[in-house]
Image 1: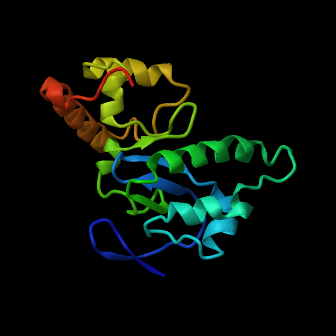
Image 2: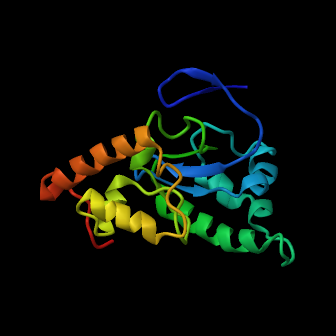
Length: 186
């Protein structure tokens, strides 16, 4: 299957199911769509397709996706996740939403992921440079302290070429005029 990346180029799509996401292109936030559960109940049935814009009404109307099977050790994560997904979709329903694979260019290209936030509750796996500012970081040393305070640092922490770009983007965010800086009290 060929998909068009955010840069307009066609790429082969890896049809293995790894990390399906719903993403708000306006707010640069994404949330886990439910891995294979999403694939089985939305993607496989043709309600959504990777790389495509999302029809929120169709997703919200798909009862099979929202019906959590009997409670058990394999469904606890789903019972926790699906209410968050519903809230995310309702909150962003008037925005440009896309469905895709986090590892592909469905949402961003290059190192633009440094501007995106994981909206799932708990300790996020991705944190934008803007969110680091809203968490009180004003210097790169603050970012280092914050990363050490987490159970696990974000996935790109410790990769020199990405760290250098993150530092550059963070410095731009901190040095921006106050009117262009993120609100530190969300």
